Length: 510
Ligand SMILES: Cc1cc2nc3c(=O)[nH]c(=O)nc-3n(C[C@H](O)[C@H](O)[C@H](O)COP(=O)(O)OP(=O)(O)OC[C@H]3O[C@@H](n4cnc5c(N)ncnc54)[C@H](O)[C@@H]3O)c2cc1C
Image 1 (cartoon, rainbow, N blue to C red):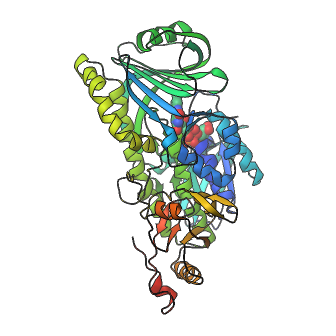
Image 2: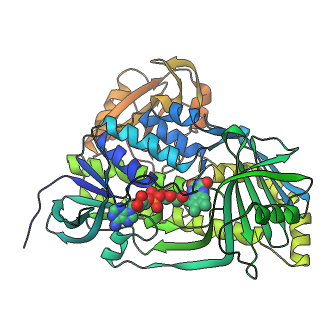
Image 3: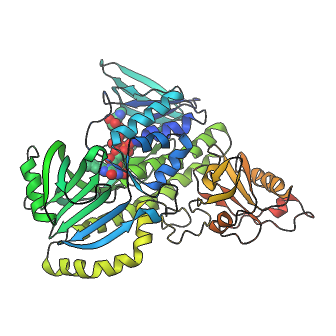
C-alpha cells in the first residue's frame, strides 16, 4: 500500500474559509498549499456583514485595522412589520471591543486575507482544480487539473475542503449534504436610495410575504436583499424598476432608488454535511454547511470553523497533541452549524409570513417578545455566545464556563502594555490567565497543565483587575486556561498553595 510522510496541508478553495485556515496553519509554521479553480477572486455580490466575534479572532492576524479601514460600522438594526417598528436593537451594548456589524464586501475581505497570507510566503495558486483524492496510509493522494489541461498527481499529509457549497472534496468523501430549499427567490443589488433614514443602520422591512433588507455600505451605497413571493419568482436581469416596485410595496415612507451598480438572483438552501472530517480530510465553511443569508452568518461561521480547526491541526502536525484532538473539530462545530441552520430557518420563515392573522401576531406580539430578548439576540447575531460547553452550540448567559468564549474586559492597570484581556491571549498556544496569584503558584500550575498535554502555555499575570476577574466568574485569586482560538480550556482549581505538588494543585474543573 502507498504511504505518505508529508506534513503539508492542501487547502482547496481560496474563499474566506480557505484563506483563514491557510493563515492559521502558515503562521504556526505548517507548510500549506492553497489552490482555487477560479482565475481570480469572485466578483459576485455575497457576504457583507462581518460579526464582532470574527473581528475578535482576526485580531490575532493583525488585520483588524485594515478590515475596519475598508468597512462601515453599522451600530443598530431596525425591523418593521407592515410599516410598524417591531425591533430596534443596538450593537453598542455588546461586550466586545467591536460593538457593531462591520459592513465590508466579501471580495475586500478575501483580498486582505490573501495579502496577509502572502506575508507568510503562501500565494494562492489560481486555475488549479481538485479533481480527485484518495486517502492512503499517512496522507492523501490528489489529482489536480491545471488551466493548460495538465493533470498533477501530488501527495500531501492532510487536505482541507474549503471549496464551497458544491464541494468536490465532500463529494469525493461520499458524504451526504442533506437539507431543504426555501421556495422563495431572492434578489440582491447594490444601490443608492434617496430617503430620510440614517445611513449607518441596518433595516429590514417585512410586509405580507415581501421582505426588503438594507445593509449600509461605504460611500452612500446599500446592499439590498429582496424576497420575491413563490408565485412571482422573477427572471432575467434585475432592473431598477423591479427593485423600485419591491420598495414601494414594502418600505414605509418615500424611498427612491437612484442608481444600481450590481445585482443578481439566488435561492436559499439549507444543508449540512453528514460529517466534518474523514481521517485526514476536513470540510470547513460552505462545504460543510449552508443556510439562509438572513442574519449574515454564513461567511462568519466558515471563518470560525477555520479558527477551531487551525490550531488543532497545527498542534497534531507539530507533535504537540495526539490525533484524537482532531475529533473535537466536528463534535464542537456540528452543534454550532445545527443551531445556525435551525435559527436562520425560523427567522427567515418569520420574515416571510404572508397571512393576515400571522402577520397581525408578528406585528403585535413580536415587539414585546423581542424587547425581552434583545441583548441575547444581538449577542447571538454577533456570534459572541458560541460555546463548546455542551451540545447546544451556545452559552446564552456568558458564564465563562469551560468551552465558552473567553470574555474580553478592559484592564485598569494593564499588563505589558495590554489594555484589554484579549490582548493578553497568546495566539499560538494556550494562555493561563492568573488573577492575583501569589508568586510561584502560577508557574507550578503551568507546569501541571503542560504535563497534562495542553502544549505550550503562556502565563499572563493580572493583579487587582476586578472587572476582568468578575468577567471570568472569579471572586478570589484563581486561574483560567484559554485555548489558542479564544475559548476557555480549563478552570484549574488551585489548592493549598505552598505545601503540595503542582500536579495536586491543578485539577480540571470541567
Ligand atoms: C447574496 C449573499 C449574501 C451573503 N451575505 C452574507 C453576510 O452578510 N455574512 C455572512 O457571513 N455570509 C453571507 N453570505 C454567505 C457567504 O457568502 C458564504 O458563506 C461564504 O462565501 C462561504 O465561504 P467559503 O470560503 O466557505 O466558500 P466560498 O466563498 O464559496 O469559496 C469556495 C472557493 O472554492 C473554489 N473551488 C470550488 N471547487 C473547487 C475545486 N474543485 N478545486 C479548487 N477550487 C475550488 C471556488 O472557486 C471558491 O473560490 C452571503 C451569501 C450570499 C449568496
